[in-house]
Image (cartoon, one colour):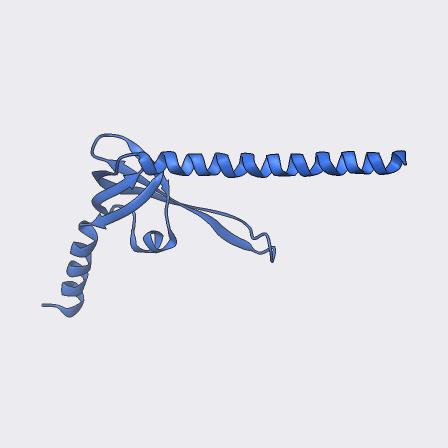
Length: 130
């Protein structure tokens, strides 16, 4: 009879701890997300100073893969800001590109390049010899 009470007590304690841990993790992530959503959207003139790619092992197939794309922006206000960007933005920007950086908290919302288009026009003119 005593064994059954121990099993019930330990199972109940395990369930309470598991629910508490899940509540803590969800609350912590959700509060951080909501706090960043309340911040103002900021747009600044910026230049891409550096692109950093961090690699690590993929958890499922144990192959090396890129896990983080970091872009360092040098803004007109004198502050260097580093953001983890999406793969589509990573593919479209190069070091030295200038444009308008729009961000909200730690997230890049948009980067409209101005010098990238002029470089493409110059390359087109050079290649077509017009």
